[in-house]
Length: 104
Image (cartoon, rainbow, N blue to C red; front, side):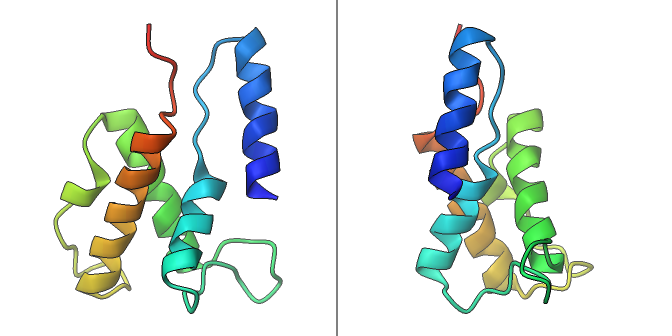
């Protein structure tokens, strides 16, 4: 479903130039690498804490232009150092393959 939604948004952005945050693709990539990641709340629709962090890292890289895989470990987050590093790596990889904003 993430691919379908991303492709739909891409087709819209062809008509109205805009940035597309590939959050679904980031989630899919993380789940492919770490299938035990709990990105959804129990309802299966809403993001868990980890899902919110992954999404926030995606927007951080898009908005700031700074690589998510360079974000230093933050002990205040409820993720261990390995998880935070993996989340940042996945975000940076996906955004390298699927840039959020069209290049001028």
